[in-house]
Image (cartoon, rainbow, N blue to C red; front, side, top):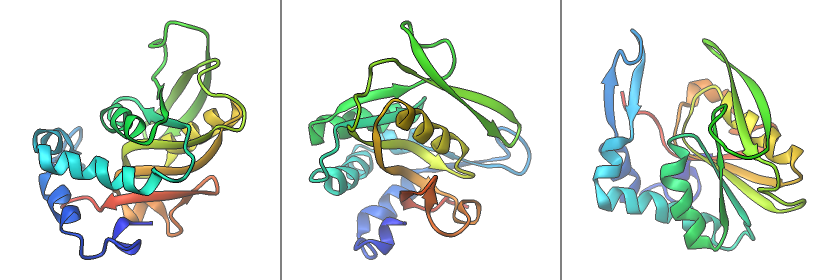
Length: 187
Protein backbone atom coordinates (compact mmCIF):
# COMPACT_ATOMS: atom_id res chain seq x y z
CA UNK A 1 0.00 0.00 0.00
CA UNK A 2 1.08 3.55 -0.53
CA UNK A 3 1.73 5.64 2.59
CA UNK A 4 -0.90 8.11 1.38
CA UNK A 5 -3.49 5.32 1.77
CA UNK A 6 -2.30 4.56 5.29
CA UNK A 7 -3.01 7.74 7.23
CA UNK A 8 -0.38 9.94 5.57
CA UNK A 9 -2.59 11.27 2.74
CA UNK A 10 -1.97 14.95 3.45
CA UNK A 11 1.43 14.55 5.09
CA UNK A 12 3.71 17.23 3.60
CA UNK A 13 6.73 14.98 4.11
CA UNK A 14 5.61 12.75 1.23
CA UNK A 15 5.54 15.67 -1.20
CA UNK A 16 8.99 16.81 -0.01
CA UNK A 17 10.38 13.29 -0.42
CA UNK A 18 8.97 13.05 -3.93
CA UNK A 19 10.34 16.46 -4.90
CA UNK A 20 13.80 15.55 -3.58
CA UNK A 21 14.10 12.66 -6.07
CA UNK A 22 15.72 13.66 -9.35
CA UNK A 23 14.47 12.14 -12.60
CA UNK A 24 17.06 11.31 -15.26
CA UNK A 25 15.32 10.69 -18.63
CA UNK A 26 16.52 7.83 -20.84
CA UNK A 27 18.89 6.28 -18.29
CA UNK A 28 20.20 3.58 -18.45
CA UNK A 29 18.40 3.12 -21.78
CA UNK A 30 15.91 5.03 -23.94
CA UNK A 31 12.42 5.25 -22.47
CA UNK A 32 13.47 4.76 -18.83
CA UNK A 33 12.77 7.63 -16.43
CA UNK A 34 15.45 6.83 -13.81
CA UNK A 35 14.48 7.76 -10.24
CA UNK A 36 17.73 9.06 -8.75
CA UNK A 37 17.59 8.95 -4.95
CA UNK A 38 21.07 10.44 -4.54
CA UNK A 39 19.44 13.88 -4.52
CA UNK A 40 17.10 12.69 -1.74
CA UNK A 41 20.19 11.73 0.28
CA UNK A 42 21.59 15.25 -0.21
CA UNK A 43 18.47 16.80 1.34
CA UNK A 44 18.97 16.02 5.04
CA UNK A 45 15.37 16.88 5.99
CA UNK A 46 13.78 14.77 3.23
CA UNK A 47 16.20 11.91 3.97
CA UNK A 48 15.40 12.08 7.70
CA UNK A 49 11.67 12.22 6.95
CA UNK A 50 11.99 9.12 4.76
CA UNK A 51 13.71 7.17 7.55
CA UNK A 52 11.31 8.54 10.19
CA UNK A 53 8.21 7.40 8.31
CA UNK A 54 9.59 3.86 8.08
CA UNK A 55 10.70 3.93 11.73
CA UNK A 56 7.24 5.07 12.87
CA UNK A 57 5.68 2.22 10.90
CA UNK A 58 7.99 -0.56 12.17
CA UNK A 59 8.94 0.58 15.68
CA UNK A 60 6.32 -1.50 17.52
CA UNK A 61 6.06 -4.51 15.21
CA UNK A 62 8.68 -6.69 16.88
CA UNK A 63 11.03 -6.52 13.89
CA UNK A 64 14.38 -8.22 14.58
CA UNK A 65 15.87 -7.97 11.06
CA UNK A 66 15.99 -5.16 8.55
CA UNK A 67 17.27 -6.70 5.31
CA UNK A 68 18.56 -4.18 2.78
CA UNK A 69 18.82 -4.99 -0.92
CA UNK A 70 22.11 -3.97 -2.56
CA UNK A 71 22.87 -1.22 -3.05
CA UNK A 72 20.28 1.43 -2.41
CA UNK A 73 18.53 -0.53 0.34
CA UNK A 74 21.82 -0.09 2.23
CA UNK A 75 21.22 3.66 2.37
CA UNK A 76 17.99 3.39 4.37
CA UNK A 77 18.18 0.01 6.12
CA UNK A 78 20.91 0.63 8.70
CA UNK A 79 19.29 3.83 9.99
CA UNK A 80 15.92 2.12 10.28
CA UNK A 81 17.46 -0.90 12.01
CA UNK A 82 19.29 1.25 14.56
CA UNK A 83 16.18 3.28 15.34
CA UNK A 84 13.93 0.25 15.92
CA UNK A 85 16.52 -1.88 17.73
CA UNK A 86 16.96 -4.46 14.97
CA UNK A 87 19.97 -5.86 13.17
CA UNK A 88 20.78 -4.92 9.60
CA UNK A 89 21.35 -7.78 7.15
CA UNK A 90 22.77 -6.93 3.71
CA UNK A 91 21.39 -8.85 0.74
CA UNK A 92 24.18 -8.61 -1.79
CA UNK A 93 24.93 -9.27 -5.43
CA UNK A 94 27.08 -12.34 -6.22
CA UNK A 95 30.59 -12.70 -4.79
CA UNK A 96 30.43 -9.64 -2.52
CA UNK A 97 30.13 -11.40 0.84
CA UNK A 98 33.28 -13.03 2.23
CA UNK A 99 31.75 -15.89 4.21
CA UNK A 100 29.51 -18.85 3.46
CA UNK A 101 26.32 -17.70 1.72
CA UNK A 102 22.94 -18.89 0.60
CA UNK A 103 21.61 -17.46 -2.65
CA UNK A 104 18.47 -16.89 -4.64
CA UNK A 105 18.40 -16.41 -8.41
CA UNK A 106 15.72 -14.24 -10.00
CA UNK A 107 14.56 -12.98 -13.37
CA UNK A 108 14.91 -9.41 -14.54
CA UNK A 109 13.34 -7.81 -17.59
CA UNK A 110 16.81 -7.96 -19.18
CA UNK A 111 18.25 -11.21 -17.81
CA UNK A 112 18.87 -12.88 -14.46
CA UNK A 113 20.58 -11.91 -11.24
CA UNK A 114 21.23 -13.31 -7.79
CA UNK A 115 21.00 -12.17 -4.19
CA UNK A 116 23.23 -13.64 -1.48
CA UNK A 117 23.12 -13.55 2.32
CA UNK A 118 25.54 -14.85 4.92
CA UNK A 119 24.61 -18.20 6.43
CA UNK A 120 23.52 -17.55 10.03
CA UNK A 121 22.65 -13.87 9.46
CA UNK A 122 19.05 -14.55 10.45
CA UNK A 123 17.67 -17.01 12.94
CA UNK A 124 14.56 -19.13 12.65
CA UNK A 125 11.33 -17.21 13.35
CA UNK A 126 12.99 -13.77 13.46
CA UNK A 127 10.58 -11.14 12.16
CA UNK A 128 12.03 -9.29 9.17
CA UNK A 129 11.31 -6.45 6.79
CA UNK A 130 12.99 -5.94 3.43
CA UNK A 131 13.95 -2.42 2.35
CA UNK A 132 14.87 -1.12 -1.11
CA UNK A 133 14.64 2.19 -2.91
CA UNK A 134 12.26 1.23 -5.72
CA UNK A 135 9.89 -1.55 -6.69
CA UNK A 136 8.84 -1.95 -10.32
CA UNK A 137 8.14 -5.57 -11.26
CA UNK A 138 8.93 -6.96 -7.80
CA UNK A 139 11.47 -9.56 -8.95
CA UNK A 140 14.27 -8.44 -6.64
CA UNK A 141 12.02 -8.14 -3.59
CA UNK A 142 10.45 -11.53 -4.30
CA UNK A 143 13.94 -13.07 -4.35
CA UNK A 144 14.74 -11.32 -1.06
CA UNK A 145 11.59 -12.75 0.54
CA UNK A 146 12.45 -16.28 -0.65
CA UNK A 147 16.04 -15.96 0.59
CA UNK A 148 15.01 -14.80 4.07
CA UNK A 149 12.27 -17.41 4.36
CA UNK A 150 14.68 -20.19 3.33
CA UNK A 151 16.84 -19.10 6.26
CA UNK A 152 13.82 -19.34 8.59
CA UNK A 153 12.87 -15.67 8.94
CA UNK A 154 9.27 -14.50 9.00
CA UNK A 155 9.03 -11.70 6.45
CA UNK A 156 6.47 -9.22 7.73
CA UNK A 157 6.60 -6.67 4.91
CA UNK A 158 8.64 -5.12 2.12
CA UNK A 159 9.20 -1.37 2.13
CA UNK A 160 10.28 0.92 -0.69
CA UNK A 161 10.68 4.63 -1.09
CA UNK A 162 9.28 4.56 -4.66
CA UNK A 163 6.75 2.21 -6.24
CA UNK A 164 5.63 2.02 -9.84
CA UNK A 165 1.87 1.43 -9.48
CA UNK A 166 1.25 0.18 -13.03
CA UNK A 167 4.05 -2.39 -12.66
CA UNK A 168 3.03 -3.71 -9.23
CA UNK A 169 -0.23 -5.04 -10.67
CA UNK A 170 -2.80 -4.02 -8.14
CA UNK A 171 -2.74 -5.66 -4.76
CA UNK A 172 0.52 -4.26 -3.36
CA UNK A 173 1.63 -7.73 -2.28
CA UNK A 174 4.68 -9.76 -3.25
CA UNK A 175 4.80 -13.48 -2.57
CA UNK A 176 1.81 -12.91 -0.27
CA UNK A 177 3.67 -10.25 1.74
CA UNK A 178 2.44 -6.67 2.10
CA UNK A 179 4.31 -3.94 0.27
CA UNK A 180 4.60 -0.45 1.80
CA UNK A 181 5.58 2.41 -0.51
CA UNK A 182 6.13 6.07 0.25
CA UNK A 183 5.77 7.76 -3.16
CA UNK A 184 5.06 7.12 -6.82
CA UNK A 185 7.79 7.79 -9.39
CA UNK A 186 8.18 11.33 -10.63
CA UNK A 187 7.59 11.83 -14.33
